[in-house]
Length: 278
Image (cartoon, rainbow, N blue to C red):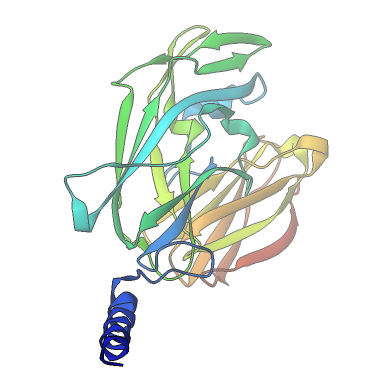
């Protein structure tokens, strides 16, 4: 009887200790202090007019291929450590990722916290296709690029986070000589905690550009005329209203504008179709 009491007390104490030693997990099996970060790749418009190379040669440039070897992340809570990101390395055509298009690079289960910077390592297989000829893009910098988080807060919290890496083709391609180009990636980061705006501009013959003034920034889109759609989209807007300007680079057409268009973070505002007149 005495032995039974001792054993029972030992089991009771052990039972009280076990919960304190078990790490709480989420329903998906991950630790409660961690969350999923999904890296996305896109080519959204720059905060200044695009490089003249992309405007003047758009008809001849059909691919801007960037070779991404690896990525890693640094959090503010651990500023001396780069955590590798689980991505699919490969060569990606940025011109397929404009006007709201993107692709998932991969998802990593990370410790929650505020993102300080992203590091990207580029390979040597980047190229540009112009006039049907594929030309290798030489790296004009060290292959490793560090992208700090500026002008906003990116927080990995209680819900999974999608983080877009925007490699702007218009500012990343440098024309070295006739038919030769170099790669100097211009990269920015944004999340769904921003507004988007989209629409259609016609006709194709007007060779239009779309400019969105958001505060002190001017974001520029090159409409897609695959199938004569004229579709355009701009993301990463931080203000509550924007002015949208439609500029015809063909001199026989006239410009027009939509003023004080309201936008909301986390949503896409569709301004419909605009036709430039002669």
